[in-house]
Length: 356
Image (cartoon, rainbow, N blue to C red; front, side, top):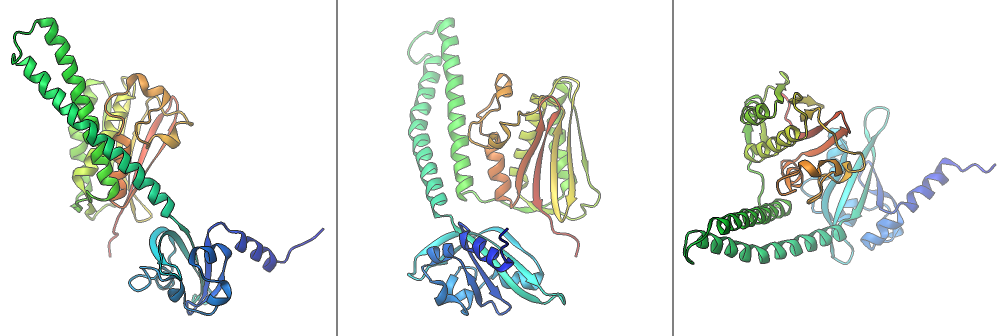
């Protein structure tokens, strides 16, 4: 049986990686450079070995924040960060990268490794999608607004007397017109958030007061549906959290509203906030109908609805997409765990600065 040496196995794996990868020594000079890195940068391996990575990669982070140098100083890895590099021809390439540092037995920095991929195609596709949706939304917003205004004038008697039956039809059309207009406005707002045109307005926020206020505002709806709504905030959260309270309140209120909507009478919804590894984690948990496993990967997509929720669905279908955009603009992440018939828990993870 043929046995590969560790070095041979490493060379095979390293060179076959579909993403760029390079390794540096303690002086941040390149000692390994794979074929994907050659394709992305235009440099051949033989040309870059022994040279400082900053002179080859030429990232916008090299001068102000070198992830490998910072990683060595803080003994920290960086995962899925975004940056720009310049290839040997001067072309700027947007990348997504992760970096990791290696230390010897005495704790001294010994080597660093960085992997990176071109995210230009992703960016171009996202930009094109947002442009098409934005143009479409703006093009239909004007006629919808005009139709609503005309219907209101007719209801006001500007075109002559209106019978009760005609009034009922017109009021139905006006209601549907306003719903479409709301959908368009929400969609345009979501596109603006995703593109960074509406940045988060972050302020120091007391989490216990913030959660209590949000829950209290939702209690009338919970009582109306015979749902017990409660909250708990970890006592270890002693410092204010830097976040956008207006936007985050929209997110949590929307999650509570969904939890109430998809829970049976007599159930419960609980909001908790706790610390996990220097992150603030907010959870909204219910004991409702749950989300089918096949739907879970898609629920944050535009207009997506789980198969078992359609009968109870309302609104614009953009609530969870907006929630994701808001949470990410606050430097966090949102995800969900659910089981049909047992309930759903949404998790929001936000940066938290621990006590010095």
